[in-house]
Amino acid sequence: MEGLSDVASFATKLKNTLIQYHSIEEDKWRVAKKTKDVTVWRKPSEEFNGYLYKAQGVIDDLVNSIIDHIRPGPCRLDWDSLMTSLDILENFEENCCVMRYTTAGQLWNIISPREFVDFSYTVGYKEGLLSCGNNLNMLCFFSAWFKYLCFLGMFLSL
Image 1 (cartoon, one colour):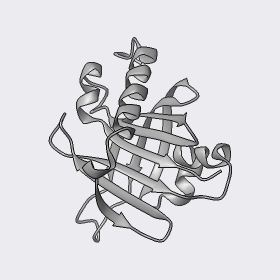
Image 2 (cartoon, rainbow, N blue to C red):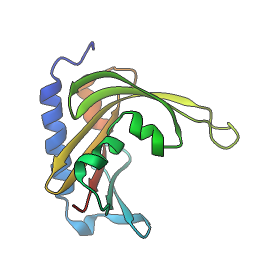
Image 3 (cartoon, one colour):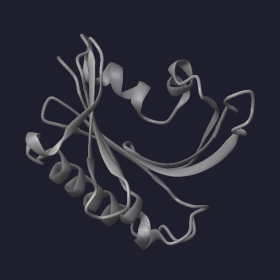
């Protein structure tokens, strides 16, 4: 894809950033939502106007069976009811791709269906997974992707 000349370097930067976010002290995060099996925290970002999100859930299964449901692909459509289509535009590595997906309309289509193009990255870390998606804004400005980084860490019980 045009503008994606150094994906390996970008993936390494993403991995390092995810590990850095994962290492942020617990008292810096505030609980945003908690259920029986999952807790989601958020904290204001110091890099962009918005929040970083961290989720933790316990799932009694092997990481390799869960990862296909988190990474972009057909399993994602099984559980994400807002996603109506998903296409992998380009795979760079096993854990790194550019995807295009559409979301369903909401609130009687007051919020219309939308299409997104994201750079997706998921990596195993310790006994879980770290994952992020970056909206590519129609594949413009590869170097600016970090500004829009959204963090999601999912840790699984093995």
